[in-house]
Length: 273
Image (cartoon, rainbow, N blue to C red; front, side, top):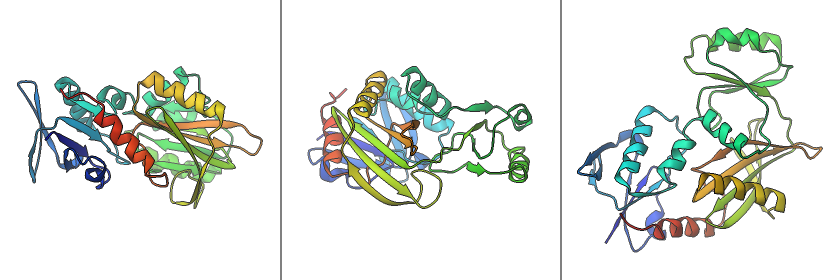
């Protein structure tokens, strides 16, 4: 029986991969060994020699060790969903934004400074959003509404070694996620508790996908050669839409079990090394 290694993520994958032995490890506590072109994942629970990998590392801050793991997976030629190449493209937020721009998708306009000392050279009307570094899940993100708050935030950013992104605040009417797995697409409208989209979600509903957004999602998926990808979109009351980001390891909460079946099928259909 072949072994599927699930990195982080959900605990239900054995149910959707009954013909495999499913092992799960956390990226935070796993060491990797590439020996004679064979890959081993090692933690306190033992050693796993995977035949296939399902990478479900969610909203934690990426670090260099995670990138090394992806490089080793790619060197081993073990098939991974998404592929290590796709996951590497989405490893950093700036690289992710560059992909959206390459696909000519409507991103929120933004400015970037590598240190806080350069923020004095960026002028933007209040309110605006400041994002420090490459954090996920709403962390490292703050809404700046006036000069006093901006001065406080700059004082905090002075001790940060991360790059800083500044973009206008989008007073959105709808927060929408399009999810593509294989050749199927689902769409969901969400509502959060506060201003941050997709954080502390209080309500969500599946909606019928629109043809234009289907085409844009497929364009991105094709560009990346991704098995699974989600696009997060903010829509203003006047109908203007902005692509906040894409997610190559999207959460599946709120979507039907069909998405789990499709993702499992993507892995099953990968040839073994």
